[in-house]
Each structure stands twice: as C-alpha cells, then as structure tokens.
Length: 136
Image 1 (spheres, one colour):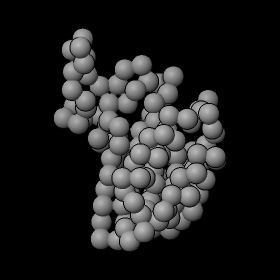
Image 2: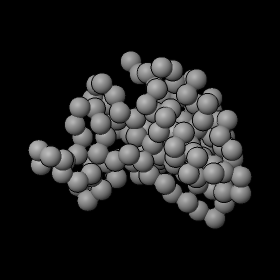
Image 3: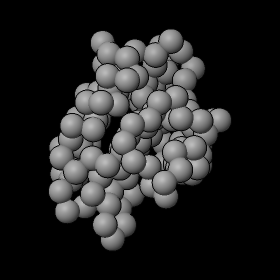
Image 4: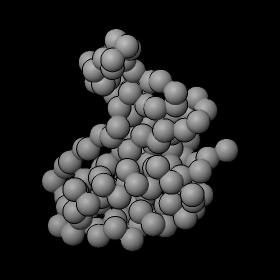
C-alpha cells in the first residue's frame, strides 16, 4: 500500500520518465504531479489528459466485453478501460486507470521519452503501482 507521492516518485524511477501525475478525469484536476509536464503547464496537461481519458472511459466501444453475467463497463470500482497509450514522434503517454473501493475516476499519467523509455515495462509497472495505490 502506498500513497500518491510515493507512487509518483516510483513512476519517475522508470527509464525515460519525464513526468507523472495522478489525475481525476471528471474534474481534470491533478491530485499530485512530479517532474516535467507536457507543454510546461501541469494544470493544462492534467485537463487535456483527463479529456482523453474521459472520452475513452465513457464510450461503449472501448469498454470491456460482457462478463459471465452479460454486464459491461465499470463495476465494483473497476474502470471500463485499463489503460491508454498515446505515442508521438519523441514520447509516449501512458494513462493507467486506477480501480478503487469507491466510485472513483482517477488515472496515473506517465510521460516517457521515446528514446529511453520502455513502453512494455512502464505499462506493467503502472499496473502494479495502481494496484498498490491507496486513495481516500
């Protein structure tokens, strides 16, 4: 179990990490941030990442398939999408949704340089971090 600050500092130890944030995708507010931010403005970066996360999470086309009961989407604090990966010429953005025991809408946003970052490792480690993160 770890808090927001510990989680973000652990994310910054990943190869190629430039910045990390925990963002609420309903409000677009960063609950915590470390390192650099895309565009140089942490608040704007959080709001823009939240818009992307909200778009993916609220669209049925991106939700997980039906389970054994035929239900889809968010259930028991589990987001309908695990993560999003956005790549551009020089970097990767990994958005990992965090499952919680309450009706939460937060995600971890990790910004990696493309030359030094390891996308597979980042995705695996963010999943582990999201599982240990304690909110509330």
